[in-house]
Length: 215
Image (cartoon, rainbow, N blue to C red):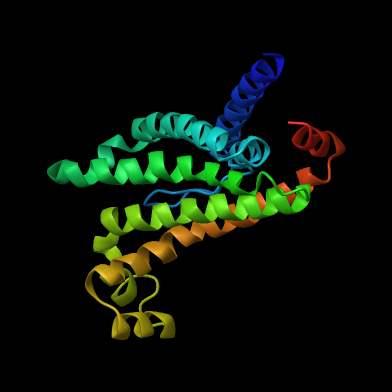
């Protein structure tokens, strides 16, 4: 009972910490992109920590809870930007971009049996954040994919060798996926790097190592 209570309390604290770190990141300039998406400072790490410590189940539940907070917060800020004429696509996008994208962080727990704490946290972080990136690529292809051709032909990338290569080799739905991968990569790649740095740092803290080992 004591261990169960400790797990619940610790999970609640980590979920709250994740949300606070996300909120604080909003106050930092240049973290948010004009069409949505942002990178944060270690806000995913508490959820990944729970997965790496307690396993996939606890990680997924914690990720689901923070996804609901993110959904409410995101809808409050960006609800007016939804495609009201295509509400069903908006619902799909919201589900993938929030519920799926944050819940999959819990898959960091696949490393929970690794005895090497540093490797457990780093590999778990890489798995969780990469899966989140994939979710954003899918939702982005649905929601902002219509901007794909413009970006590569008239937008900021127009005329570059990269843009010409993309336009000459891809079109339609796959072009939307490429655009989404590029756009979402602008914040998710920094997010992944920041999270990996944080995972490495906390793996060297004695209390964290002991806490994970004595779950």
